[in-house]
Length: 219
Image (cartoon, rainbow, N blue to C red):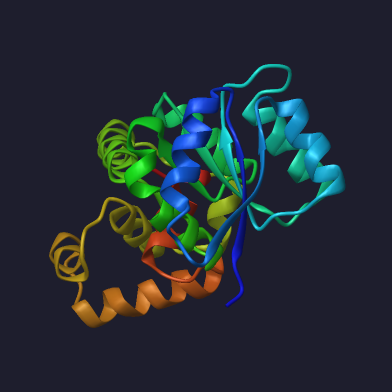
């Protein structure tokens, strides 16, 4: 069985050891490297490779944002799951925009790390439950604040006004039945809009639509 190769970067050896202990019982995951600062991460990936990097956002020498920017500039294909003691939505949006595939709060890393690795390795993005809840709260707050404002960014030129409405509601976790009632359209029409959005935005599912909405400040 092909193993998922993982590199762990954090400035606390105790946390690295804890993650390694959790992953040691997973037959499909292999820890191939570890780093205590961002400079070491970059040096390691200049000579080696891994499928996934578990990356602390706050590290000495070069922080996690700097490491992500390096990956982006070099067009490296490794997927990155960010670890942080902070769960503010500004930071989450920032790391998403520069290439993170997932975000885990450190206090929930041990219980979610295996699921996160497998999810990201299979091409999806992953957020621990507390992070997802925080994003959802931000979606709702922003929608109320901006509901009467008209966004005229070029991004919207590819979407119809109705598609934008549906996308915002999907991002706020309304289901098709609820969206049909809110917009006074049939469930079949909602499903048609959903399929068109997935095709237009080149994502795989409704989770992808929600992430796209966050990354592009739609909600």
